[in-house]
Amino acid sequence: MSNKYRLYCSTGTIISKYNGFDYTLMNTVLSPIVKELSLDGCEFMMLTVFYEKFDEIVRYMEKVGMTFPILHSDKEIGVLLGNCTEEDDREALRRFDKNCAFAKRLSAEKTVIHLWGGIISDKNAQHNISLVPDLCDIAEKHGITPLFENIPCAAADPITHWEEINSLDSRARFIYDTRFGEFHRQTPDIPRHPLFKEGLVEHMHISDFLGEKGDFTRLRPILHPGEGQIDFKSIFSDIEADGYRGSITLESPVVFEDGSLDTDKLRRTLSFIKDNI
Image (cartoon, rainbow, N blue to C red; front, side, top):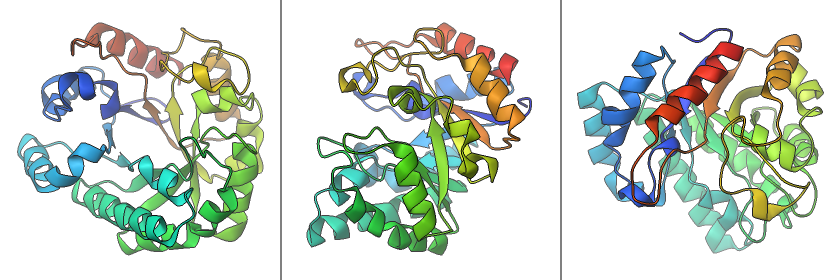
């Protein structure tokens, strides 16, 4: 088991278009690493190509004995909401309902939500945020805790939107992504924020960032800790000081364009996190 916090690895670290979105790699590649390093499980990254494979994936995961404490919902949900049309709102809520139902079948307890995104980003954030009670209703129906992420913003900033979400619906919980925090230069602010201190930030995503504040061109490639400018030892110290008792997921990928995987790098990064939390 991990130290103070439950430590997971995202399936997105190894599954991508470069290997044909091969979900069996979760078992053949990721599961052995999880066992070897005594991690607490995996976070399932929902991809559009999986919508037609829910039954197939569930049967496979039951067969190999894998469960996922957290599911990262389809990132396109927030993009759809940002279009501000009734049709796209309905489609976004329909997708979220399917994501939550799928999460439950995978034994997940929480789901990560991108409430905005894409080219529109948070320019229509007030519309997106107005749908938070509907999203919370859907999650509650399935017995899933909704976690709203500090997605990069083009109009405002994630902490401001978190505060708006929290004031609208007390059922909302939050997830802190270190790369996005550094993108907005909010790395020192988030662990000291009342939402963090009150225990409403229940999960974290770990990846690094290297670039100027607000530079969207530097969000990719997604860097591993040590490849960017974030002081992770300081972050881990800050969250411990503020009584954080949530979970942590590594999101930095190790997939090459030829489909091969740098599993040694994945082990090193996970070991670094484990050794410092």
